[in-house]
Structures are given as structure tokens and as C-alpha cells.
Length: 105
Image 1 (cartoon, rainbow, N blue to C red):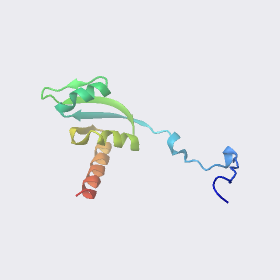
Image 2 (cartoon, rainbow, N blue to C red; image 1 turned 180 degrees about the horizontal axis):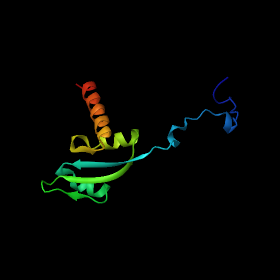
Image 3 (cartoon, rainbow, N blue to C red; image 1 turned 180 degrees about the vertical axis):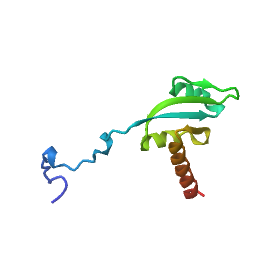
Image 4 (tube, rainbow, N blue to C red; image 1 turned 30 degrees about the vertical axis):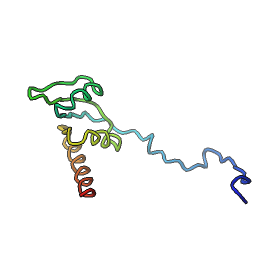
């Protein structure tokens, strides 16, 4: 039989095996980020309550869900961002960045 002649048989929704991880609630964390001065324009577009430090760096306090999206979002700023708080998130980003660097060495 060819794909054109195959008939699609609808499955009841309860029979489908759907990955439900996308709807799992993740406790948000209060995150403090410190950005390089060169990222001021970008940071001020993405965040509210942006504080410019005396040295030009940009400090942001934001509530983020601690999940893969959060890690990727922080890493998307490359070496221009430092996680100040919480310390466990800072460690997670450090581990991920080290792993990325090792794979691309």
C-alpha cells in the first residue's frame, strides 16, 4: 500500500501518549542578572526596572521560571551576562557554559 492509499484512523485523545512536561508548573525564582554595558540597549528593551551601575553595567531583578527555557534565555546573552543570584542558578549556568565550551574546543 502507498501513503496515498493509507487511511488515517483517528485515535481517541485519551489513547495518545503526549509528553506533558510542557505543562508542568515550575516554581519561579527571583533572579538578579548583571549585564555588560554594551548590552544596555537590548536589556532595556527586554526588561523593566533596569538599573545602570556607576561602571555602566546593567543590573536587572526579574522573576523567571527555573527550567530549560530560562537557562537558554540566560545563555543567549553569551559572555555579556552574569547571574548574581540565586547561587544555584549561577552554578547551573556555569556548568552548561563549561559543557558548551568543552564540546566546541
